[in-house]
Image (cartoon, rainbow, N blue to C red):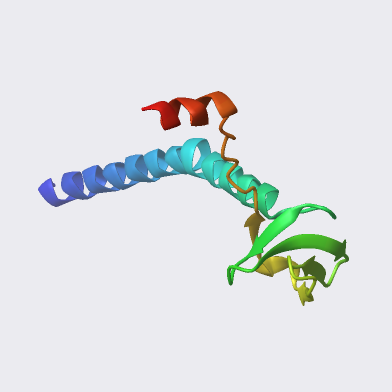
Length: 110
């Protein structure tokens, strides 16, 4: 009689754990992974004329693009073909604000 009561309690606990994990998966983990996947695809999508960086660190401007290859041109004019999965991200260089002439003159006076 006591053994039957304890096995019924443990199966209830297992069902509760399964329901909690299922709810966690459908309401938290699944939407989060979909957002991450969409963000990764958005950073890897490049158009002709944009700058891109490969997984190997090569940075170039996209010259042409088709289903099998993306052609990048370096600053020296060399064109290399890469598979689309080799594109790590769009490359947006850091823009440093230019100093004005007033700032340079004030630094010379001091």
